[in-house]
Image 1: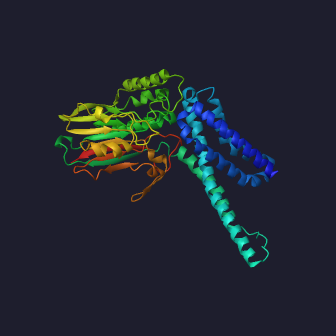
Image 2: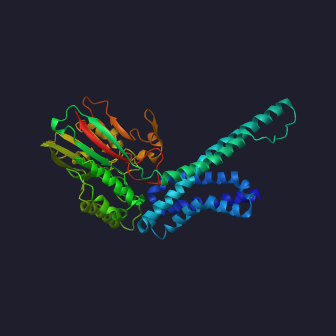
Image 3: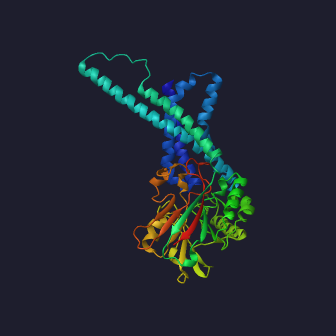
Amino acid sequence: MAKRTIYLLGTLSLAMTIGGYFIIAASYPKELSRFPFFVLILLLDLYLWLSVRRRVFSWNKFLKYITILSYWFPLLLVISMGVGSLFVNIYLWKPFLATFLGGIIFMIYSAKLFAIIFLLFADLLKIIHHVLRFSWHKKKKTPCPEKTKQITRAKFLGNIGLIGGGFVLSGLIIGAVRWAYDFRIRREYISLPMIPAQLEGMKMVQISDLHLGSWTNKGALQDAVDVINEEEADFIFFTGDLVNFVTTEAYRYKYILKQLKAKFDVFAVLGNHDYGDYVKWATLAEKEQNLRDLETFYDELGWHLLRNESKLAKVRNIPVAIVGVDNWSAYERFPRYGNLEKALEGTDTALFKILLSHDPTHWDKEVSLKYPNIPLTLSGHTHGFQFGVELKNFRWSPAQYMYKRWAGLYANPATDTPQYLYVNRGLGMIGYPGRIGILPEITVLELVS
């Protein structure tokens, strides 16, 4: 029976792998580079099931079938979304539903992966123990004793993994319910000795990565807008990723966002999600229209969308250049549409420049190396991974393994005059519909000499 089950699961896995490749190639071509990761997740899912199935099948009928259905539900969801995408583009039809279902899949598989890590380690211990046990008795030419009935270290680790997986799932659910909209105001004083005296105390509010397709709480967004307006800032800057996939996600929040006010207006740039690159469009014209609709939406909000261009503002008679570039990333999987040289045209008379660039890798690879005359760059993009630990003297997040600058204020040590980058942790969410440790952020920046 066990062999038949393994054979059946192996056949199904092979069929799903082949079918999954063609579905992703047809419906989500931009995600094809991640296909080996999806296959690995499938194999690990099967490994976990083979590790727990005996225990599950020993339970009463009702509990057994409920557990089986719950276990395979996320995989069935993935298959349904994949097959359905061949007929209906869910990102265009119901973008919020796509985000919601993706969040469920992410949370359940995160919990499974936690359990798998412990089970893999437990099985490794078993293998090592059996090899040493049989080798020892073979060398001594003595019979190998029967297995002890006491709980082994490997079994203990396996149980810890299963229990821990339950705690991980519970924690992720709490993070989605409790901390998703628990935003924090972070204040930073940017020390720049060369700034004109008139700019002393100039206040800027930065928000980033709203990802309105994932937003479910209009009240929380209204609260954030009210808090921002209470700051009575000189500038409000939005550093990209207004939506997840398509412009229509933003329409239901137009009235709230339109309330944002600053003395010298609101300025914005595009992030990697704003171009519609993560959707398979029927025609190129549809994709281009989606981006034009987004530009129109910004006009209706009264925000200045900067696409490789700049605007000059007179702050207490001092010309300040707000420079905005399209997304530019050091990683090939993200778009590189930004043109900083073009964006800087006409800013020679400015006595202070602020650059808005969605991806912080742009600062490392281009801004800090070639443009020391840009003292302040504002970015977002990383979300701080929406998960991590931030204490007074210690912080950690998986984001730091991909991004050198992943959250907060950074200075360029290579320049004689101070040059800063601030990376906002984002106000919205993508993928996982919640936050743990790395809370949503509203940044208040003030210039001091």
